[in-house]
Length: 236
Image (cartoon, rainbow, N blue to C red; front, side, top):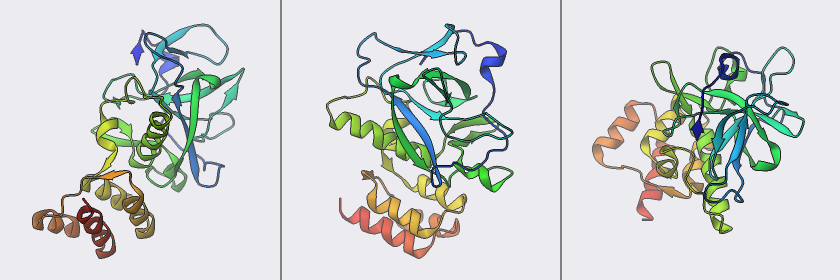
């Protein structure tokens, strides 16, 4: 995303106490629609009704939804004046300080992601699309990345190949790896959900060497999950 100078109030961090998503344990996101070819871009507005553009999004850039009405936040799109309230990263690697802004709803192809990967002071934070990428550095968490990449694959399957995926991690996130499994186990997801992700992932690049299996077990990965990983690795 090509970003300009961000006003202080336009760079509100999307951290804090969140309330549960009201869509059956799911959060909401969207990727810039396929009609934005070449130099065309979807404007990212500073507010819900002004004309000030703080950044430009290209086809394949993706956002998470956020609602700030009331006393708590939800990770669903807040809709006003034909625009939706979004969280996004301005950096190409999709890491750093997340921002909030507004995008025309018609400019996005929506998708839903599973809650469960978020982590915070309250149980409701599990619907957050964000995860830590280092000290005080945020990025998209595995639940959001999986749904985002599925949407990008769907767009590609329709002949709408994104000009670029949403950040340099998008192509690597398409293949489920050992680190992804460790992240899901660390946040306490049920074995059944993780196994389902292993079985249904579009692609996997699991390391099932002896050393890797020892690392998985020391990290608390169950035998059932390890077996599912090995079965996927054997299919290659």
